[in-house]
Image (cartoon, rainbow, N blue to C red; front, side, top):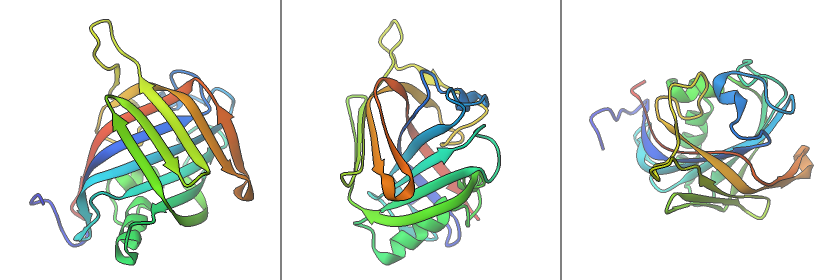
Length: 210
């Protein structure tokens, strides 16, 4: 791995699939209130390669399913159920959980500061795929989404940069549409089905030496 790897921080590279209840484009990314006043969403991170606290976590996945009761930027306002790849060892799972909980600092801590309550942490089978620009995410049989990016007149992917809010700080995001988006977690008060609403895809790199 890169020289920025340390035994206390993280050096990660991967892809993001995200979808929510807002229309196109989600106002949360520019700091405005969600379309419906509240936002129901998931953020799905695939770690292509990298380490956390010196632990190799390459090829693993992390997903948070969230309810945001108002403006996305209010600290401690989100509620989440988080899922860690069932393929992860106990050591890998602990490292992933700590990093995404903000315990190791850096850009992941900036996002974690928005979360006020973690309702549950579960292990699950997670399928995270990007094929020719189109993304598919499946967590067990209770989270599923299929999405594709918007394109410019020359066929290039429409990109969102320098936004006030980001779930992948420092990386450009690709504006997308979720053709399907379904969450069935009634035991946690999170169940919804949407079609043709906001989605975000991204290739990201997050590094913090600790």
